[in-house]
Image (cartoon, rainbow over all chains, first blue to last red):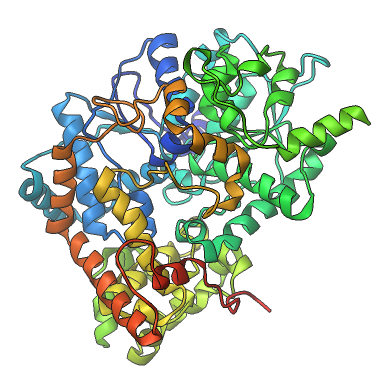
Length: 362
Length: 236
């Protein structure tokens, strides 16, 4: 075999990711639904891996949901993105790291547009100067936050307290992964493994002891569709997409679903609940749902973070069965507590937990 | 050459999204929206390629351009490097520019997107700002979300957020001077103009439909566009 040839073939599926000094921009969806994931990401990067990750208090949304909801014009979106670049430049950073896949797609689209139509970059520079007085440099490196966790997956494995292995049987846990449409479908060369061999999440699962399960609808959309979920009258679109995925993955009995995009875990979690309410159908074993994790939550669990510090209590599908399999200790009494153990009550009955109790009784 | 086609051509997404379509239907085969709605991106691209003024106007007033979820799966699979999803974005932009969006049930929903998502962007600096958005509007969010809503500041504090706080952090209060910059960007780049057009044409349509129209989310027209589904959109 000619090694050089092989390396050349696979080069287009690889991606350059900066080693350090990142300018972090947050995700609107993740902050609202999975705040513990962004907290964990920064802790992992800064404290466990010793990296410099900077956040500017004046950065804002990239307008992504408004842009893909078609109420924010292209020029407006590009100029808001240019302002984020300006904050990065002014702060002395060159490597941009968005927490959101929609944002990652937007930044990639803007850079690609400016590359192919240089006059659009000039127009946006004029707009930004006029509106804010700011100027900017284009980032040297653009990586999604999951790209960084992927890059440092071996370092995380070396520090691992727990693995994706069933501690009762010693068998690797089965994971299905969902990378989110805007990670690599639009610009395949910008994602690890491209659109054909996406490896950003699979690489983490394999490195941390688990087994990646392929299934027919692995690459189907979760169903956000922007206006399709947000407007009540359209929501059947969203649910039917997730439903298609659940039906397709069910025969493979996954122990967990691992996600990349901030929105996908919310849909794959909440639609399991809604389908259960509507049809009494559950996709996990013993009437339970399939736990859905963000990559930050999984990295945190592997590193030994407390599940309730990671925010697993915000999931509608309980994750305790997965914690048990991984041998992760947790205190059920602290699940719904506030800071310093403050009593915050608890949610009304959870159908999945109820089912589990019935199963145990039977 | 038609005027509407020329206007579409001015949109860079249209230039990027449509080079030469061979009508193979690969986009329709991969399309998530096509599985749910009576929707066929191949036909849309075909219609646009005719450059027929009347057909394009009908398209801009139709339900069909609002069915796409912009997942962009079509981009990956088109053998000619087209992106019907980008063509849709150009069509939607022009439909709003001309005021044609209010002629369809799905198009009228743009007022919701403008007032809710657009409103959050300009008021808070976030696309989503969900304290107070409960299961009355989003039932599938479930009992854990209800608990979360009931204890929002405490839950955020527990998980390391800087909710409404100064400085960096999760759901921090974005400084007023930063929000002013965003508002100025909207003013300079046509964002405000788009918003005003959505409001203007929606108000006219509400009058025509004899539905009460007001500011915010608590009025008859707004409730109607959020929840009304004629159920004429899916495959039979």
